[in-house]
Image 1: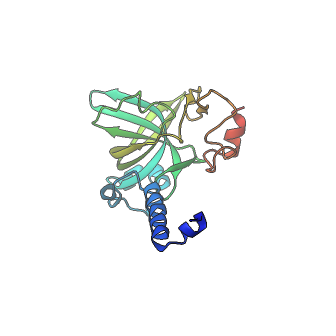
Image 2: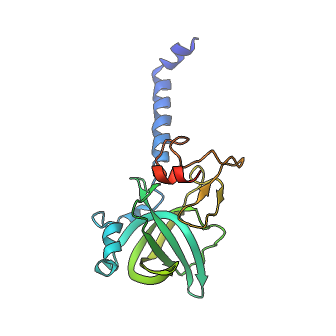
Image 3: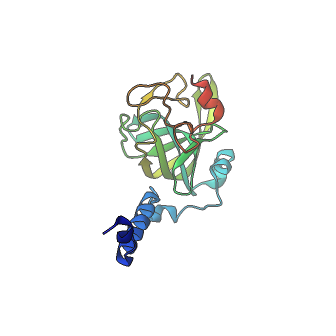
Amino acid sequence: MRLADWFKRPLIRLQLTTIVLVSLLTACVHPITKEAREQIDPQTTFAMVSENPTAFLDQHLLIGGTVIETENNEEGSILEVMEWRLNRWGEPTSLDDSGRRFLVKTSEMLDPAIYEPGVLVTLAGVVLGHEVRLLGEHEYDYPVFELTEIHRWQIPFRYGIRNNLDPSYPYYVSEDDDPHRHPYDPGYNPYPYTQYWYRNSVY
């Protein structure tokens, strides 16, 4: 039987269609549970909270970005994160132009070797308020969230990283240490992971 005749069979077509649909649905699964997302007000944005955190106390938010630092203490862990834009499935797709940072607190002990600088995360959190810390030589007013859920993104979002003096400006390399392969560059990947000036300033 010819291959073209094989694909004409109704049962085969139905099976192939089912496989494709299941694959698409699986690829679009949100990393944050439905229960956590149901508590989030879609009208409240991170930009609004960043401007006035005390006006949004106890509100749930879906946020994400690049881990800058993981700090452990007697009370748990604190993540410092640089905000990235999220798509409809909660996937970080590009660094936000504002370069805003935020803190995420949890009573859990997060491993700094897992949540190391450069790792992309998506999380659900509750607004706790704000905290002023030194950022370099200047004070920075961080929005603060209590962690509800967190998802650490894997390949292809991150495969190899070299730390930069500026932790919000990580230098990505390929598995074979080729500096001209940039997994967040649309020239090598179909997603707009970094702005034009960020990509070009690397080299």
